[in-house]
Every structure is written in C-alpha cells, then in structure tokens.
Amino acid sequence: MKHLPLFFDLAGRTVVVVGESPAADRRADLARSAGAEVSRVTAATVKIADFRGAAAAFIATGTLEGDTAAQHLAKAAGVPVNVADRPELCDFILPAIVDRDGVVVAISTGGASPTLASILRGRIEAALPERIGALAKLARTFRAQANALIPDPARRRGFWRRLVEGPAARLVLAGDEAGARRVALGELDAVRRRMSPVGIAHIVGAGPGDPDLLTLRAAQLLQEADAILHDELVPAAILGRARRDAELVLVGKRKGSVGLAQADIEAELVRRVRAGQTVVRLKAGDPFIFGRGGEEVEALRAAGLPVSVVPGVTAALGCAASVGIPLTHRRLASAVTFVSGHGADGREVTWPRLAAQSHTLAIYMGATEAASVRDRLLDAGTAPTTPVAIVENGTRPDERVSVGRLSDLARIAATHTRGDAGPSLLIVGEVAALATVADQPLLAEVS
Ligand code: SAH
Image (cartoon, rainbow, N blue to C red; front, side, top):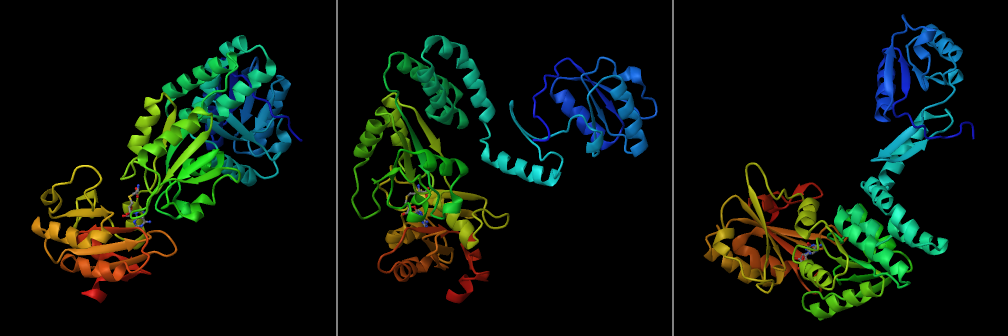
C-alpha cells in the first residue's frame, strides 16, 4: 500500500486552495462539502503566511513553476499539500469518491491509473443501494440503545448483522423508514427476550419474462430469499437467478390450471414470515397489475408482519416495447388503459368508456376470449378497422406477434393461439399498426 487511506475531519478547519483552474474549483468544492473553511489564493499573490494554521493545502495553478513555488511555501509552513496531477509533489492524494449520504467509499490506485479508479467507482456506485445512507442513519439511531440493552457481544453482533442485512434494512432501502424502525424495535425486543425475530415478505414483480428486465432490487432479493413462492408464469430463466439454497415453491395458477387458492397462498406467506423466513412472493409482470398483490399485502399487514412491494415491468409495457408499439403517441393515442379481458378480476368495466378514439387498450387475459372482446368493443362503437396486435410470450425467446383489424380479431386469435399457447396480450388501437418484427412492419402483410 503506497498511501494510507484516512478519513479526515475538516469541519471548521481552514483549507487553502491555490490557483484558479477548474481543478482548483473542484478541490475547493470538495473541501467545502466536508465542512472546511476554504481560503482561495491566486498563484501570483500566494505567500507563506497564507498557509499558517491550515489543515491542508490544494494547489492547482496550471503551471509547473506556479505549482512548485506554492508547494514550497506550503511545505515551509508545515501544511500537508496536494498538487493536482503532480503526484511527486504530493503529501496526500485524492481518491475517487463514492458518497451516498454519509456512507463514503474512497478508491485509490496509488496514483497509477485515475481511469481505473474511476471505472471501479462506477462499479461500486452500481452495487451500492441508493438509500444506503439512510440505512447508516437507522443504525446510528439504534446504536446506544442496542449496546445498552444487549450486553452479550455475540448476540449484539447478531442484532447488528440482522439490522443492516435483514428485514429492517430492506424496508429502509425501499424507502419505508417508519416501517424499518418498527421492525428494528421488534428485533431488539426479540433479542432481549431471547426469541427468534419474524422474517419479512417481499411481493416482487418478475417482469414479463426476460430476466434482464428484472429490477435491480428484484435481482438482489432473489439472492437473499430463504423461499420463493412463484407463479407458473414466472419462467425458469428468472428462477435460475435465485440463490442456490432458496426453496422454490410453485403456488400460483395459470389460466386454466389449478394452483393453491389465494387464501392458502396468503396463509403460507404468513406462516413462513412468522417462522423468521425472508420470503419472496414472485409474480409475473407487476404485482399490482392483475396480480392480486394487494390482497397479499393486506393479509401480511393484518397479521402485523413486515412486507415490501417491488414493482415489475408489466406485460403491457414489456410486450409493447418488444414489438415496437408505442402505447401512447403524439398523433395516434393520448391515453392507454390496462384492462382484463375476462370479467373475473373484480367488477366488469364499462366498455363504451374504453372505446374512445385516440385510446390504446392493453387487454390482459383476453386472447382466449377474443370473440367476446371483439363483440364488446364493436358494440361499444370502436371502428371495425381499428388495428389490433396479439403478443404471445412477450420479451421471451419464443415471442410471437400477430396483427390485423378488430373485425378480424377472433380469427387472428384462433390462428395465433394454437395448441399450447403461452400468455398473450391484446393491444387495440391505432398504435398497434406500428408493430414490427426485425424492423419490418407487420400490418401491411395481413390486410
Ligand atoms: N401481473 C401481470 C399480469 C398477470 S395476469 C403483469 O403485470 O404483467 C396474466 C396475463 O398477463 C396473461 O394472461 C397475459 O395477458 C399477460 N402476460 C403476462 N406475461 C406476458 C407475456 N410475457 N407476454 C404476453 N402477455 C403476458
């Protein structure tokens, strides 16, 4: 190690910055962000007295003579000095810095390669959760209490590990600080009473099927889960991203086949979280779009258990992007509605409201009822020539898309969904005519 990394408390101390270059400005800003009083001096006027009592000096005059002269003065005053881009003149060097609200990572290659340092910084930025600073604050607020209440060092370590890695941490990182404090208090209490703390459930959207469309948070949670309760619609490619030891449990049903009843799924979630597990309830698309995620959240809340919700790319967004259909478009559509094609998901919608012009419909669970969808839209006044697209297995390797006109929807659906069809989404509206496969427009071929 060429340099010892230290974190220097500069609050209220003077830092001298010599020079007027952009590098000097950056160093002045950096010193100020650590609470230093910055004293700016020009290369032409700098003298030894400028450095007296200073904690550190930054020099960036832009010329070798200017830098060397100022560096001599600083050294003579006994002040540690950094000269921009001249490591041979430096007492200390500046690391590449990641600063997440007080959680700070400093990276140095000992001056060998600032480019490498900045690439490493990028990787660390990507790996650190956005709200890691809030997690550090939560830990700070529990420090005195936990140290006073848990005298046994091993149990105390257990509490801290769980606080920064477990359910409370997850809630902070998801933005629920009040929930995190509640959970942390519960855990503190459980440790004191030598009971095992409860776990947490995450209701997670898996997206439409392409594993690259998982959110960063979903991917992290798949790596943390003790158990993953998933629907049949979640493909193996996504389950393959789970932690090797995670228990995979198929609970959901796909249209047509039976699975666990919703109440049984909720009971299973509650049972596992009570037993202390970190449970991921993994659903296709977004958990709050035709996913019954709302009911699962209610069940967990009613049982007084911690729960977080992680959104996912819903089928309409995934399919539309994948086949090049903009769901809204300045000339063609100024609204989009996600609607269920069969009435079973709550109260039936009023179709005339949906039939308006300049309105795109993304119809879930509608492909097998294409004739009835067509009739309801035609009755409601939608033009028979309105373009429609059917996207099956959207975003997956076996994606297929067919396009045509509303009057023809039943026929297109029948030829499209032959045999063992995958999940299919209908898109109705002028924008559906823009569907492309391998950059080729499709509608011209079928009209
Ligand atoms: N929560 C999910 C929807 C569940 S309902 C979401 O937000 O996407 C199940 C319906 O979603 C299917 O009948 C189908 O209409 C649609 N669907 C889900 N994944 C799909 C995919 N990859 N391609 C096309 N449609 C999909």
